[in-house]
Image (cartoon, rainbow, N blue to C red; front, side, top):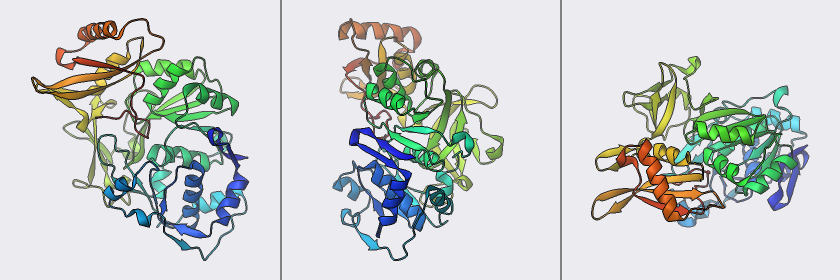
Length: 415
């Protein structure tokens, strides 16, 4: 039974081989800092078996970035000798050890830093596995792993697969045609990633993936246009849209872009007068370093109600752009640009102008091959946007890019 398939690095690891590796560890490390997905997963499992706290660092962090996080790079490599060796005999015993993880165990991770400095967040086992589903229905799942393994979304896929003894197929940072081969060759049944990832995959890959039965997405706004692309890519799949964050974990789920607060947590999740989603401290145990206001955490996510109960996410509060005194939601503009048939994706942001202050700017990735010149494309896109948006929401400058810059978590890199 395979635990991890990583074709790019010529790795195929069974659960039995994973146990041999874990049983041979002879030290405890307080930090996991490696670019090997296998090392990350095996060290993380080891920390849960022995109940020691561990900090998971993005392998792309430089020494200066580590110092900026308040850490000493010299401490990253320190370890202590393991004295009470435990032998995990089989996969069933592994699951028993993990389910009995010490309540004192903690995992420290860092936010993606999409719009600023990454911040430290401490997670408990219960919060990391809050929405993991187990049972006979999931025992034959095969998961495509499309996230950075050091961030919350990747960890949620890891736990969903691990607690069902599923196979994980690493597709993180692969091109669209290679991803399709990996999905089909390994009979992947489940995939989770960001809307941006799926848009790029739809552009790179022509054809369907019939083995996929479940598609999960989150981290960015979900829209009807993307849903249509997903239906073509994964014709036999159920689509699940999830609201989650590094601080809160997985919280809300929906089959569309509309969410509703479940009855079980209606006293723990609410929307403020300024339409910001708030989460109660009781859903975030162990979050001592997170700022609460009267026991409520302000997520920074702004929502819009479409009826009495259901709402859709609009934007991050800190992503609104002030143009001539008007607030512009970049996601709204991107959605209109992306609705144009020959556009793959876009990124809207502001640029300072000495003459008129802030200008609205758009990076645009076009489908290839593309017949129009960039000048003609700019004229046509501007014309279409002026028909759908108020004038201050139409970008004044367009830059045509081969690809849209992303963070390590697969989200658009906001400037």
